[in-house]
Image (cartoon, helix red, strand yellow):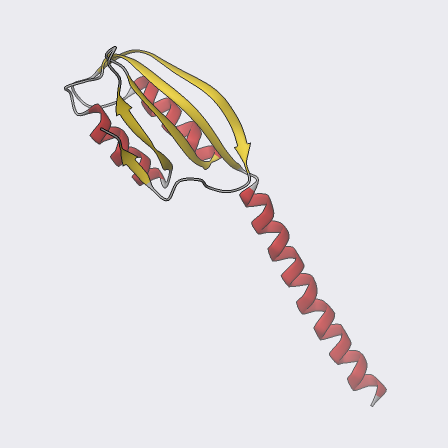
Amino acid sequence: MKRAAGQCWDALHSRRQSADDATTTVMAAASNLLALDFEVFGTVQGVFFRKYTHDQGVKLGLRGWCMNTYHGTVVGQLEGPRDKVALMKDWLQRVGSPSSRITKAEFKNEREIPDYTFKGFTIKH
């Protein structure tokens, strides 16, 4: 009887440790979220830049928004895993829409966030 109780305790402890490990993994993944603001300069209006930015953000699983400004740039905010945000930053600096001509991209207010604040990626008008 003592042996069976010991085996039950070991099994319970093992399951609890697995659950604790899973919680730690989820918490570590959550702290891996970044948020940032961006502004892209050049020929980025009238060339479907916002649409392509939206599509690339969705493809990468990012959340946030983008919009045209009155001075001819596109601004926005991004949220997502660190590696996906890095890919999007590169895309905003070097790729953009097929007809765009990017001269500069600025990224500000980069910070870790505990959780998402946006539900998806949108284009603001």
